Image (cartoon, rainbow, N blue to C red; front, side, top):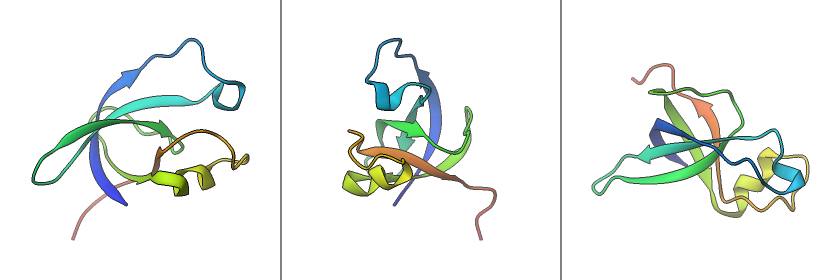
Length: 82
């Protein structure tokens, strides 16, 4: 699981049926070398929020249909860190 910050929206007017109604967000992943990725939002995250992102084949488990072709999904919003 990765920690990042939502830095933007990605608009996609045409997408496969399984992803219709899904919101795509650009997330800056923290680390020694920060990088950006596009993730499907499954929790209603917004700009500037810190989020948890799951990547790889496990990202599909956030959807009803396991064959949905995604490899990054936002699965949580970080409220606070200790």
